[in-house]
Structures are given as C-alpha cells and as structure tokens.
Image 1 (cartoon, rainbow, N blue to C red):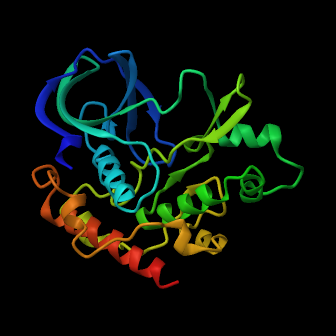
Image 2: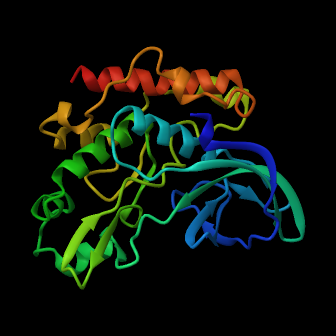
Length: 270
C-alpha cells in the first residue's frame, strides 16, 4: 500500500490555507486547501497547527491508517494520499505530512450536510437514526457506527456525513465515509501521552447519530456481522502501517494497532 504515501519532498508552498477551528474543542487549528489537478478537484488537509509553533498533530496520518483499515474491512470510503511537503503558513515555511483526496461528488451532484438535510426533511420528533433508516441508509449508518467505535472517532458531527443530490436525475445518495483524523491517539503528542492513553476508554465523542458514546451506539446495530463485512487478522498491522515506520514512532504504531485490534476483538464478541 506504499503507493498512498509520497515520501519525496514536494513543494506545495503555493497552496493557500483556510483556518477551520477543530470542532471537537481540541487545541490547535485544522487547515484546509484545494486545487485543480488534471481537471479534478483535490482537497488538502493539514494536521493540527499552532501559530508560532508549527504543525503539532498527526491527524493526517490517522486518515491514511483508517483509509487502509476500511479497505481491509471492505467498507466504502474516501481514499487519501499522504504527502511529504513544504507548505507556507503566515510567512513561515514548514516541512510536514499532509493528506490529499479527490472530490467524491460527481459533476451533476450537489452536496448538503446530513444535519441540514435532516432539519428540512425529518418528521416531527423523528430521531436522527430513524430518519436515516427511513431514507434507506440503515446499512451505511450501522457500518459508520461500528467504524467509529473501532477507531474512537471523536468528530462525527452532522457535517461530517454528507448527502449528495442529483436534481436532474431526482436521485439521492450518501457520501462515502470520510474525515477520520480526530480518532485513534490524535491527542497524544509525547511518549508519556501514549503510555497513559487508555485505548479502551469510552471517551465523549461528538456524534450526530445516537449518543456521545461510541460504545453505547453499538446497541443501535441489529446485525453486527453485516456492519463490518471484512475481517481483521493478527498480521493486518503489516498492511496498516507499511511505509509509516519513519513517520510515527514504534511506540505510537504499537499503541494504535493494539487499540484497533482490541476494539475489533471486543466488537466481534458482542
């Protein structure tokens, strides 16, 4: 899977970044940019940035790890590339890893955040989960809930689930799973943080569907085997972390793998 990592240093100082405050209340700012490459719109994201300090997070690396995890599990999702690049922010040049993805929206489609779509189309008193069932998205939402438990996704708010509409064809579809940076051990920035991190803790998460507990949300899923079609093996870590050995520490990689595999084992035992 090394093809999804570009380790040769790229000059991307021409990109212009917009500041998006992290919605989970974490320190730092997540920055986004975009460009057109060979007629395709490309979206770029940086890990958490602290003015005057630089890129302090590793959310972009999480995107690659989760991308690979969902590929192994046979779950439709947005694909990312991890790029070693020089970027310019506020007059300073930084060397970092960023992630890039292509637009999953077709030319004939418009997009709307699920929370906005719900506000316009839901019945009075209808829960977010029941609304998605009525729209025919039960399997998708169940898979999303299962994935968010495996990776402890802290940021599945209503704008991180998108509905794609084709007005001419009168069609609706829900976008592939995307935006998994604020997951795993994203809050750990030192070896001590990694050592103290409880990989099975049910941390409070910002979920549009269900409750703020990714663990409690598992009870919404009736067919847990169907929600995760593929399987994770004890040697799947070789695929998950290929090419990341010089980007993340061995301790960080081991902690992420232990987290994913232990949560997967727990899920399989339900």
